[in-house]
Image (tube, rainbow, N blue to C red):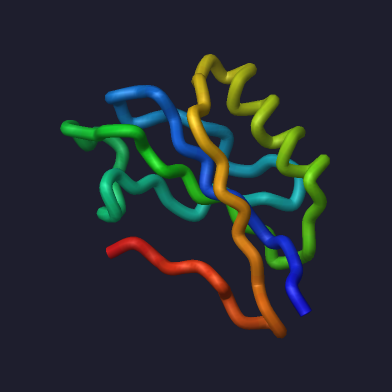
Amino acid sequence: MMSLHGVDVYLNTSEFPNLPQEVGSFSLIFVASRGTRMKPGATDIAWPQCRYFSETEVTDQDIENLVAKINAAGFQWTKCQKLFKIDGVNAFSQPY
């Protein structure tokens, strides 16, 4: 059975984003650029991927609320990729 547990939000910024660490049941797990995890203060960031994940199942409305918070923080998102578990196993990859 497939269950929704998170989302990768891609942003239109070249700076390391200062995002909310928690929104609802979501926690910001990492920020990556081109498949490599980045730390605050990093430079040479292109279209950062910001992974928010929840240990409990979430809904599309939860994701919409998260994206609204990101917009309210002043960031423009370009793409969202939902993160599913299938039979309790992550059905998505991890960055380096």
